[in-house]
Length: 190
Image (cartoon, rainbow, N blue to C red; front, top):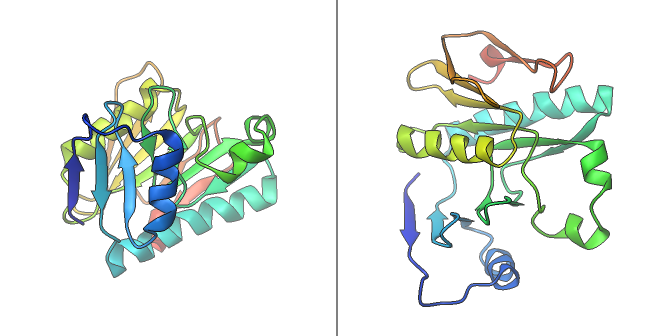
């Protein structure tokens, strides 16, 4: 997937205009960094799309059983506290936080950082860019994040106030105390 970043310094792209831009161009995926630069991403390839579906499906099934929050796919936008608009490959927020939103907030980009998210590296992604994005989530309140890297067969685990933990060729990942009882079976998505 090739990403392009446009500097929109001379254009006022309000939250409402950005939301409308995304709605009018559903074949593309847009994000904005905290500087307001527009990041344009092409749709994923088949392999990455299949991996994403597997990640989201396992998370959704766990949540369906436990009913502790809401699960979101890679098309969902989150308005982070630093002003960035991001769309993780899979995300989850607690039911309490979801229910604190207004009906209007639920229809647009969610105005908060997920409690948990997954980013999946595709063959064309630059690792340092995804790592920066994961750190941005942590800096904005993410409690647990996984950067899954099928290329290197590794997973980076992000927590608040901790060093990034790197696992080599794990077969499963635990949702720890953020997603109690959730175990992601990596072998089923690869």
